[in-house]
Image (cartoon, rainbow, N blue to C red):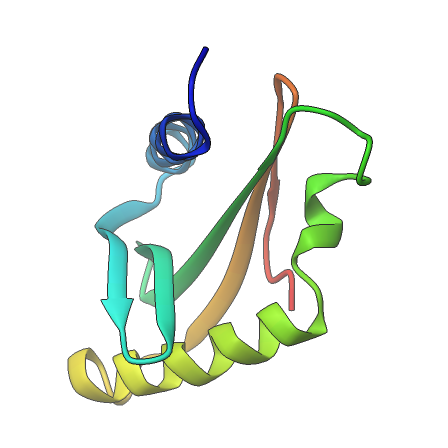
Length: 112
């Protein structure tokens, strides 16, 4: 039986492969910044994309997308702004979410 860390890593690996297949360039994964972590930083053309990956093996607590609530979105906006100011201050930023509900993988572009 896999622990949550292993399941999360596998989900992020699958999401990264999918993003690459969709034409994204994955620049970094699991970027730790003050106040949190960014699951993936990508380029989609000239746009810097901050990607949150959420996995749910069961629908017991609802779909994975519901886990990206208002508090999580606010945290991601804050840490992404800090990150972008250092690495790409003039870049246009977009937030995408990749969800894994069981085996179903979905990409939510411009999710918030």
